[in-house]
Length: 454
Ligand SMILES: Cc1cc2nc3c(=O)[nH]c(=O)nc-3n(C[C@H](O)[C@H](O)[C@H](O)COP(=O)(O)OP(=O)(O)OC[C@H]3O[C@@H](n4cnc5c(N)ncnc54)[C@H](O)[C@@H]3O)c2cc1C
Image (tube, rainbow, N blue to C red):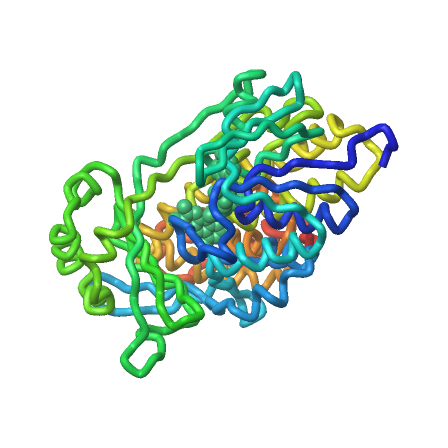
């Protein structure tokens, strides 16, 4: 690093990305200060607020490993081998994500994960300041105002450069936007979510298959459930904001029970406190955030949801945010001036963030509407066969995103070509008997070069 450069960085937000970046940078010798608006979760308990658990995949695991956090996190993770689809008629079917148990995703508890990362960040030498909400930034003076959430007092703190890891509603981003046009566009999904809980069974075990991500697809809306280490499941209902059903027509706990009794019949008896959960957990909104610029010269840069919030249907928001941290920390190891580091970081990550945002939107339709559809099942069967015939060459999108670390943009581009091949090969068919394997093999070899594991 150039001696003239500041070796200190100020991170705003000690959520998932902020805490992980703090570990990586502190270990590399940076002086790191992290300001977080919530209280210290080690003292007051975790005040999460949303998505109690998350799916962790290969990209996130790799980043955790780089930070020395993987073993601690994986001790509490629950394996999910595939989707357990709960059809409207009560049938269930496990649709595996990968070929075997080396290709799975993991359910992790957001609070436990955040606590682990915060502890490691502090142990690595980062200085954490809780109950400090970023309120305003004077980029000319290189100073930021933080409000103490306990008593409302303000402190003015000088900084060399700010990293905005303060999530979808980022205050750093708003401050940057005042200094320059970031080209911000927010696209609301028009659907929201609400969380409920399946408690442990009377004998203390799981009430339904623990090693799966459960889905109740119902066309325009759906429920999912992810297992927790303490034998519970977090259920999330995703539904349009308006319509029938929609969050404007299903408002009260009684209306929620009626919806479950009609459409999620087998889930209802698993959620004994449905009314209380409904009343306690507010509905969350979902949107995609697009930004043309992620940095303000050498003075500020955005990572994670602050730069590219996405809808949660590929389970990749955190995984992608963790990849950001590894990329930024790696670039900060070099000799380049901060402005070039931030510009290089944006150039490397932005196309990939756009690609996973797109795939996350597309996966909502697949999860709620396609997993029980005959065209989809036929294409999926052929996809699995082609994956076996052409290992490393014809790799399903889900596998490229979840089990590999190739750039998301490459996963999107290849999966589009593969999808076109599958559609053409199965067009008008109701079984795979008449598919011309020889022609397909030739087409695949011509169109898809072997993938190198990223
Ligand atoms: C319903 C749902 C399900 C999801 N499921 C998955 C999943 O399965 N897998 C996955 O990979 N991703 C999932 N995600 C996405 C994931 O939650 C986010 O991508 C991830 O939390 C982003 O991390 P972050 O650190 O950028 O932001 P956050 O985790 O939001 O952290 C931001 C931090 O900044 C703090 N902060 C905010 N404002 C200020 C301020 N003014 N001053 C100081 N501090 C501030 C906040 O308190 C918080 O601690 C899901 C999201 C939702 C909504």
